[in-house]
Length: 487
Image (cartoon, rainbow, N blue to C red; front, side, top):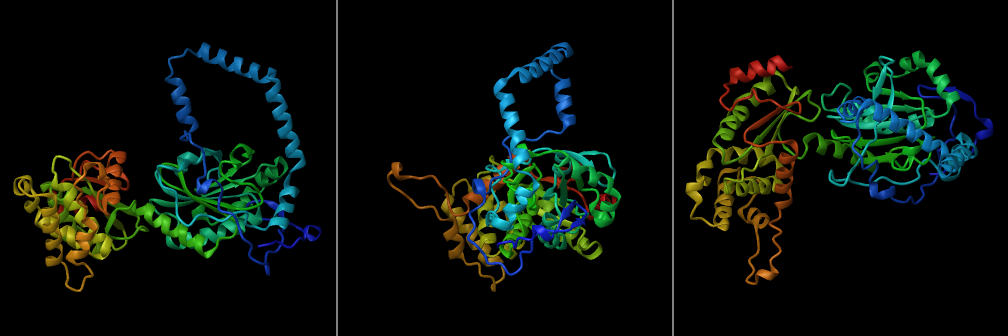
C-alpha cells in the first residue's frame, strides 16, 4: 500500500511510545506486489544470547587472573584507537547516521508504503531458526534494568518492537488477536513489548514522560514492557528492521529462537499464521488430551505404550484426574502426552507409529486409541512379538484400532496400513531407508525427548519443568493434593 505524503501538515503528537509527527494516512491505497521476507523468514543471530549476569559469571569462572583480563581490555582499547580502518568505518557510520535520519525513513514510508516485504506463511523449524539477541533496557513496571533474554527464555513470546506511534498502531494489529486468544498472565505464552528510542533527544523526552506511558499502557502489560534508549543499528540487518518508523513483531520460542516475523499492519494471512504457529509451539506438537493452550498450567507426560509404569499413570490421569480437573477446575490445566520411545522395547516404535497414524487420520481419536494401546500393551511385549515380523505387528495394530474405535470414525484398516506401509525391494542398493509416512513425526518426538533431557518413561513435567515427585503409583487423592498445592 502507498502512504499519502503529508509531512508539511504534521503536528506533534504524544503517544505511549514517542513524541512523533502523525504518520501519513494509508487509506484508499492500492495493494502492491511485495517481495518475500529477507533470508527466507530467518531472523536473528547465530550466537545463543546470554544475560550480562551469565557473561559476568562465565568471566569470573575463567582461569585467567584479574590482571591478565585488565591487561587484555586495555590492549583491546588501544587497538581500537589506533586502528585506522576501524576509525574510518566509524566515521562513515556517523556520517550515514547524520545523512539518513528520522525524516529520511519517514520519506521512505511515503514512497514505498507501510509494508516492505511479506511474511512467510509458516514458521521456521527450530533447527534452522536463529536467536533473538539480548537487549538491556528499563522495565516500565519497576524502572529497574531488565534483560530481554531473561524475559523471553522459557516462554513462547510475541515480541513487538516499535519506537513511533505509527509503528505502535501497526503492532497492535498483531497483539489484539494474540491477546484475545492468550490474555496477559498466561503461564507459557506472553506478549513482550520493546520500545526503542535511538535518538537521544526523543529518548530524553520519553524518559520524562514515563508516568504518562504507564497510564497509556494497560497495567497487566507493564511487567513485559521494556524501554531501550540506545541505538540498535547493529541488529537492524539481522532482524530485517530496515525502517525504524515501522512496527515489527517476532514469534520467539522458549529457547530464544525466532520462529517467525512480520512488520507493518497485519494482514489476515499473517494473523492466521501467527496464531496457528503459537498454537503449535504451545503444544510443542504434543497430544493434548485435556484443556487448551490458554490454560494457566501445563502437565506433560512422556509415555511409552509398552511400559507398564506408563500404563499405570495413563489410566489414573486419563480416567480419574482429567475428569476431576474438568469438573472442579475447568480451563486450569492443559494435559499433553508425548511419545517417549524406549529402544530396548522394539515394538515401542511400532505402537507409537500406529498411534500417530490414527491421529493423522482423525486427531479426535488419539486419546481413545492410546487408551486401547495401554489396555492391550501385553500383546506387544517382547515375549509376545519375538516371532512376529514388523508387518505382522502393523496388521495387528491396524486391526486393534478399527475393532475398538467408534464405527462412525473415518479410521479404517486400509488407511492405517497405508500410512504404515514400507515397500519391499529385492536389490539392497535401491533401498532408501526412509521409513513410512509417519516416520517424520516419530523422529520429532524422539528428538524432542533427547533435547529436553527425557531418559525414561514415564516422565512428568509441570509448567515445563521435570517433576520427579510425580509417581505412576499415585492415587487420585495424591494427584489432588499435588495439583491443589501448585495452583
